[in-house]
Image 1 (cartoon, rainbow, N blue to C red):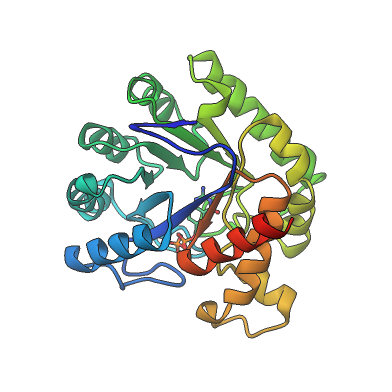
Image 2 (cartoon, helix red, strand yellow; image 1 turned 45 degrees about the vertical axis):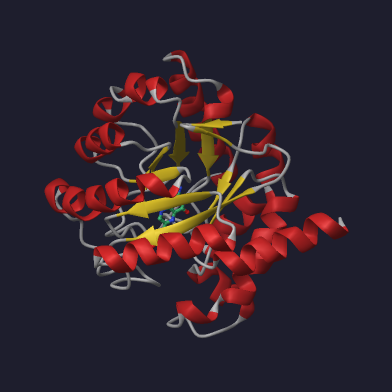
Length: 275
Ligand code: HH2
């Protein structure tokens, strides 16, 4: 399967390693702010078996303050430039058209938009995305990060989220992207309660029949709720993250967006060897 400048094995799920170049991300904020730290983390993730590296310059955790596009670009562009020789697909986690445009010029293989390619300005970038043969990830979010967890409400979460993803998939395909180029992501934790997340997780097999699916549950609060652990310790959610990654793979997910690359790669290899 084509992912920008690379071809990835479509026979197994891909591991997307998270590289947050932010001071305030919920589990790894402040760890990769220096260019040298970011590069070291990316090299390590590649060695550990990551298939893609997802670079983000804005935290979208519940309650996060938005950053200006200029600030975000200053954080991510030097990292993307420095990672080019690493020879691994690079994803940009951004909902700002100006940042995405500049990153496409530097060279990225996937555009991960947590606001789901809804704005005209993001849609206007699709020809440039198409030209790079890059993938586009359409994620569902209810509301905005600052307030999304205050009282999320749906009449039918599965119908609403999958309806949104299907509509956006059709919109992107109408501009020339192939079905395989568009990753669909229910957006776990983005304006969702535990009950919503559970319903969406159970719907993954059906969603995977619509197109390739990305699942991002790594270290998220829903894992602490399910494993009955303290809600303020995201670094202690490895067991829950691995269980959810394997279950998502078994449900047909194509991409697993994770913080703990080595452990996830091992868990998926064991699952593939035993299934
Ligand atoms: N989750 C986060 C960020 N980006 N992108 C996609 N496609 N799917 C996700 O589930 C997703 C995402 C939040 O996680 P993280 O990057 O670790 O935290 P923060 O937003 O605080 O930087």
